[in-house]
Image 1 (cartoon, rainbow, N blue to C red):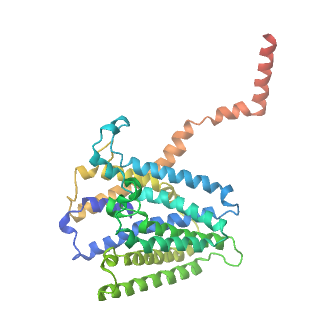
Image 2 (image 1 turned 45 degrees about the horizontal axis):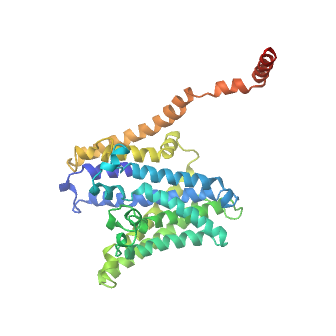
Image 3 (image 1 turned 90 degrees about the horizontal axis):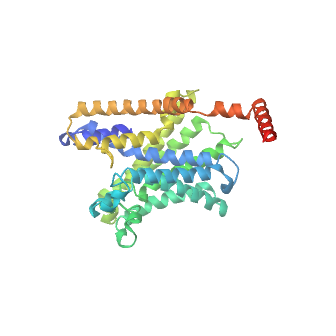
Length: 375
């Protein structure tokens, strides 16, 4: 969904981007829920793994892994927008290039989301509060405050690099408000799954999970419909509705219903295809690779330099399929050749096995002792 959405958005000609086409409206909707799916599942998986052990946070191995992952995401996010092809060239970069470098994209958002999840887990342990309350409250905070944050010129109050995390006025695509709310909502779901998985009284049965997700998603969509009626009647401040805060309800409700369907279908699945697992393990690689191909970087030109909204529908769809096939092939090749084959061939394990086996070690020590006597 991510790869095809970016590819079609880049290549599809302007004349085909009309709400008069049902297919375009459906594509826009799917593209609108792609990021919420990604963010919500990120929060759910991270907290599920974090809470899969009874060890306190300070002794939890996921703490260090989460911090390292967050720092990696920050580094890659800013590296993709680095304005110079060399470190020394930074000093010659024109001032107008730096705002684009400071833009917060999805990698920086996920990195910040992981740190916020860890901070929320710390607060839950420190004050003996339920994970649900912390993560659900944090998600609600980011969602509710988003329309108000958009009205503040944060560049007047904060450094530009920090202000970019608070609103879209700095050019950011994924500021914390409201996007971090999806990560926090996923954290609440992950806390529920972890608790149910370790409880003998409340096992995570697919049908029960699907039922609860369906109820939550339906309620959010019903609330979205009510907000639409309130918006149409003109009740409420204009700036509040200009930012379309009700889209959060639509997207979050739709994601929960999709997850309910997946949970229901998973009841009859006993195993997962190894190829799907490889793709799932290489999502970061896929994101970076397709972003570099489509949008370029300081070290290469992207497809946007050759074709920016220049293709009709069918060639754009074909290009999206080819890009998806290329990314799947890259993920599989990276896992089987680079990780499993290439590095395996460079492994020094046979040498270390020989050195540290009992027989070889004894011979080696005996040789050293004899050499010392000779000296």
